[in-house]
Length: 186
Image (cartoon, rainbow, N blue to C red):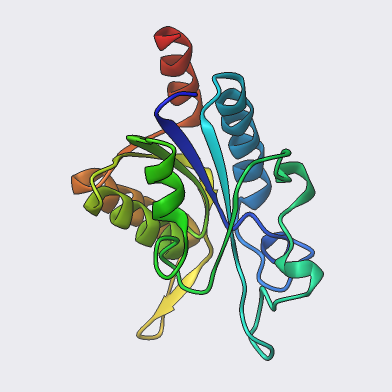
């Protein structure tokens, strides 16, 4: 097994168009995430699934509901760890750091949702913990946000957070560039 891991964050049913909290571009992000995941499995990188659970009465990802399930196209393969979290940062109060340390991981690649919350929090935490961190920007999705009476389009939210991560926390790249560099290194 390599010293690389892919961390798939919150690709769950409630983020789909049919879900309770749909995201802009989620189908495209899932397609790219699936490509990156297939490559990771092929190169024997550790594939880790992270799923969020919220308490009853929450707007989405309510524990025990279909909306909280991982989307079928991203279902974990046999033996792949699944981390359940309750905070945006996938490392906070979970076993993620232990899984990575036990496997001797040095480099993490992050895909999933939402760009402005769990991707941002998890990428920053991974970097702070000393992991060489990559975010596959087109394998991530978000939604429009509102601030001070102004709506910020999802594309702008995504760009702002990817720019911030690229500034000091992670290499931010496309699935195509990532997969190309992976093929060159094998």
